[in-house]
Image (cartoon, rainbow, N blue to C red; front, side):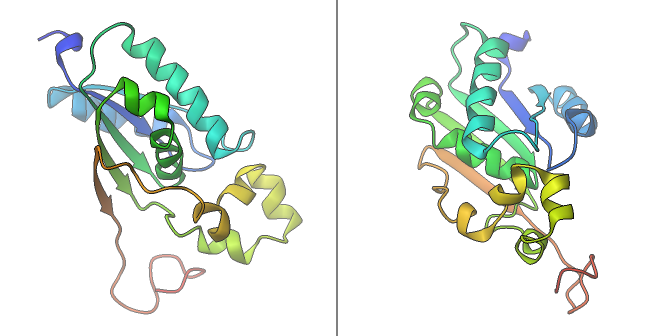
Length: 170
């Protein structure tokens, strides 16, 4: 089976990460029969809509002129917000009529630590534009995935008040 016949899956990393971190998942998807590719975005430099615009252009370059009836998206953390911004683009939904989105630990209500650190010069310096993009009120303005998108959201916790990160309750 050629890549043209396999369902394409775009993988998106979390904030301050790199596409290389998604390579093991991309390789596993390729072994499972998908045409998978990890994409990067400059966390600090652009807003979510800017990331989505660049990602759509990269997808068009990757997929070329082939007919794509369904696109898969596998995201981690802030990559889920980039995917939501991508799916809000009418040009993408018109081009690829169906989508499947798997979000691993997305900050769909904003990032707790970003909200707590919103006034920190250190935080804003480290995260750049994303410091504002991860705020709860900003994330609330993103539309949910369109009806054409099957969505699975995976999150986890320890089941106690302590959680995995001592800075985040639960």
